[in-house]
Length: 466
Image (cartoon, rainbow, N blue to C red; front, side, top):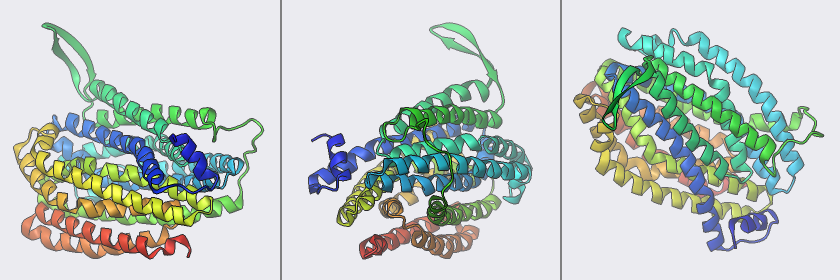
């Protein structure tokens, strides 16, 4: 039986064997993992290209990274408020209702992201100073965040298009398009970051044009890649998807019930992202006084670690789809099985990637920066974090499964208690004594405790409504 037949069997409410469930989790996870990895590869590209310009350039991006994660998290929350409903409607075989949710999401998220973009543009000049950046770092950081703020509509619609396609069961298209975005990022960065230069190709010297914009060029390259990908993502969703394509006869009206449900799902998620990213912003404030080397090492270590945990987010996306469609079809037992299998797969995969991260940490940092002091400190903290990855995987995938069931409030509260009660408190205490190492020890301890809390939530099964 192929995956399409299994999807039809799921939507008809028929029982799936344990083997079929495992196969569906794997099949949906692979393209989602590739999509998540592609976004991290783009961060690697930016970090490596900018890293060659020196530690100040790296620190400029690192200073505002936690803020861009927070803003990006708000965009993701807005998208998921609608796409979770799409998964559940498709599970209930109500495709017309799913398309109605899509049309409303396009209207609401457009208004939301324009307002968000204006707010971010207005604070771009003073944000780096709020975060404690040095004068040499603040200028580049401000320009980087300004470009990011202007590109937010593209970020929002790329995320909305990708999550809608995923929740409708199409994991392949977002994966391909996100990979395409990485390629575009390399091309745009190549011409925008560096000045015009001479390169040797086959023994022949060739003059290559470059705008020489440095950190600003990295932001512009990413923004352009996001914009092009967003156009293709929306085209595939609205005009080529068999399930979700918009028909001429469809009415573009807002429905109060849909909007209330979107808010009920999205607000706790936005709160969760606010808690997590707010803690990251405070962590940046804790790290900033430790010096440029620590800021740069912290930023690159976060980028390096992300390649380890992105498989977890890919599996979480698959879990959201499978649990959401199972709940919509009234198959709570199947939703439970999909959730547990997804968590197991995520824990196994991230344990493997943690081992690889520990072993190859020096190689990873040598690719990201030529600065030896940054390399040494970055390797040290990255290896500390490797021990937290298995339980970090559990928290990531459980959150994805709970999201599919519409359970977002309790996970948000658990993240609040974990991040602010443990990580920030420990980091603030340890940083003055052992520097950046103390910040990452606090992170490791907190992620382990968070994983345990999410596993308890999963196995108590209150999220199933029983």
